[in-house]
Image 1 (cartoon, rainbow, N blue to C red):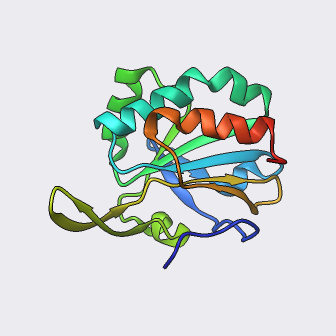
Image 2: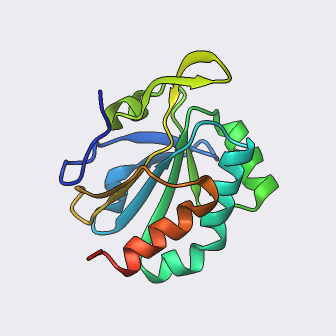
Length: 157
């Protein structure tokens, strides 16, 4: 299944966060939410991406954006990632990758000659009504936060 696109309704989901608490997308109705999918906590690219969002948190807060990172990692691994990198937003455990599949970001990948199934690094900005406002699928991990902030500050572009 291809990734969801602008204008589609974001799939409702409930996942455990790094503390094992249930987080429901519906909890954020009336707010904009950046749901970013990443392959694996504490790996180089994922760390760079998460730290960029961490360092942009004040700007994202001023724009009213809630950040939720989703990966197939366990809550324990997410806790370690948050602690080690001083992350200031929630990470959610999609261990059975059902949410990734619902968003269309789970599928075949190739790395160093190996083919396997995994999460494609794609982010979705979900509007206050639960619709996908913007899909971010073309960025480098180190620039992800800049691409998001540029869109948020200049949505007409």
